[in-house]
Image (tube, rainbow, N blue to C red; front, top):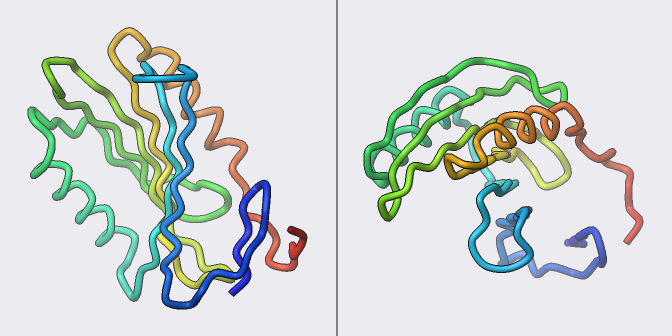
Length: 148
């Protein structure tokens, strides 16, 4: 299958799974007070609510002092989405995350897309604004876009 990134294209063997992650930070090196991760994972027949239930459960199990502050339905890129907002403690620091989860069926099949903006307490105002701005501009690429 032909695989495309922003900068190149190549033939991806069928036995390799595409679990692409895109990471954006405000710091060119090392830890960043604010970051955005865009990820996708193939899914079968699960509903969006079932996937979000699993995400929340996994976060509750893996993050210290996890607190879910918001779970609300929304629309992102024309698809039904769920917005989560939560916080937790990592290495003694309070971290905050807003996350959008949505399902989209495209050329690669049925995928769960997650867009997660994470911030330290000192970057929290930027965190809320940056996440909202990013979601407002999100669009899925046309299926006939075959340029490398």
